[in-house]
Length: 137
Image 1: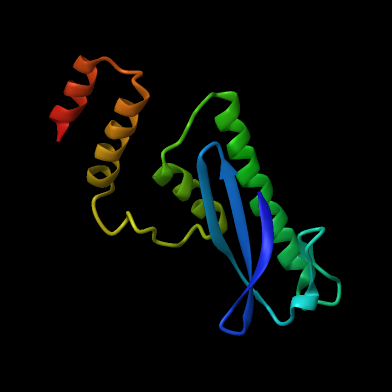
Image 2 (image 1 turned 90 degrees about the vertical axis):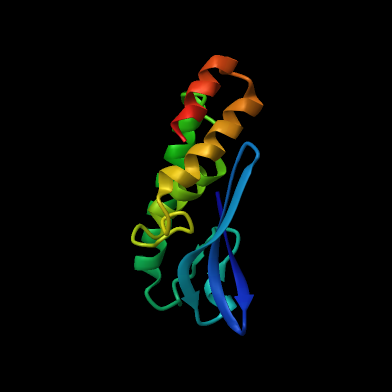
């Protein structure tokens, strides 16, 4: 996981870039900084001359450690999450109160068919099991 600053419409925002296997998510960390000079790109943190640098740096560290811990769990347990699961995991740490694009509808109806397609592509389930799963919807 890596943090970087990107200028959007004249404002500087801190973004997170999270990669795991074939999945990649770039998302705003929820912070805007006054000046690009307040950002230390080598350390991926705010400099001591930035307002509220202690609070923001601590929060960025907490987010990073939580996401990296989840990714380590994926690796240890040999889990490859779907794109939706990966996005939700990241979002749950960066902005736990946000609404993802899948929460506007009944999430099972959205995620389940995608999950079945994903499992079919991996060819880890028998045809009979896939048919049983498909019969649910």
